[in-house]
Amino acid sequence: MKKILLLTLFGAFLTTNIYANWFASEPKKSSKAIDNSKIYTLKLAETWPSNFPIFGDATKNFKKLAEAMSNGRLKIRIDSKNKHKSALGIFDFVKSGRYDLGHSGSYYWKGKDINTLFFTSMPFGMTSKEQYAWFNYGGGQQLMDKVYAKHGMKSVIGGNTGNQMGGWFQKEINTVADLHGLKMRIPGFAGEIMAEVGVKPVNIPAGELYTALDRGTIDALEWVGPSLDLRMGFHKVAPYYYTGWHEPGSELQFLINLKKYHSLPADLQNILLAAMKLSAYQMSNQSEFESAKNWASMKKAYPNIKVKTFPEPVFAALRAANQKLLKKLAASNPLAKEIIKSQANYLQKARAWTAISDQSYLNSQSK
Image (cartoon, rainbow, N blue to C red; front, top):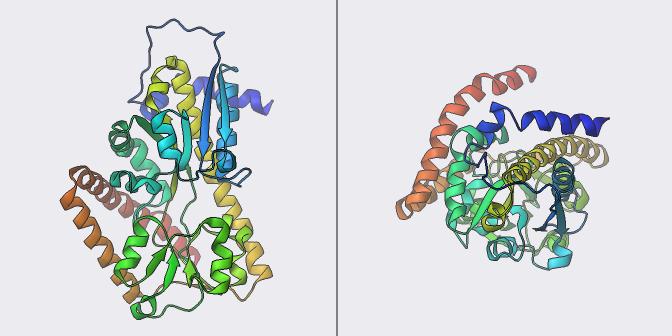
């Protein structure tokens, strides 16, 4: 009954003006006659290993939704990292057409196109709620289309982790000097900011992180938050758990090969996008739920975990480094300048509302 209700709601959703707003840039009609008997099999490569929680659940949910909503006309085959052997090969897989679809994180591709960096999460940037509004109504999706179209791909929201924690540290950070020479696993733009204040960012495979932290190969690491940190066991070897600043609303992505996308009937194109967006929404809720549940478990089992926030002088240095690097990027790259300006302008509007709504409410509860 629950499944029937879900499909009925989506049938209504696909014919409403809300749908038109969500997919305004997508084709609504096709001159091709629809062959309801033809089955389209699409291959999806994901960055994650088999049965990876939350992130991997998003692709499984997408597969179920796409196949059910299309009445079996879409078939999705998922290949995890264990199968294709290249966790960070998703961009090239989908661009080349080896895979039709992908699931990963946009900031992994900054070495291929620096403008992909902006669509996961930016330090001191938007929360997940603010970012979703920017993507869907503030021009974010259109900018993302502009970046990925030249690579023959479309990127669609793929699920949000929410505000990520700032990481696990072996020692307390009291001054900027405490960061000098610190070896830390931290990816993306945040790693470049940390390097500006003296940190030595390192890139270590996920399976080696616990051992590296335990043996002192690294002094600190950033992962996600309680939703995924609990299973990694970092709290057993690093006592200081710092609050976030670098990824306030980390959005994963679905990638689509545009040639394959445009070969599909218009109704299946729309179903594909709707299934991606709904599975992203489900993943965001799941991540929030698991973080709350796992943090309760961690606090109870490991009461000595010390939750810390960087002192203001450290934040001041990080903010200054962030502005310096953004200014440098904008000066050298017109499209980066356009994206940076769009995000900054929308954040200014959104944060004014967040301050008198969510922030004021939370402040009132802490008194």
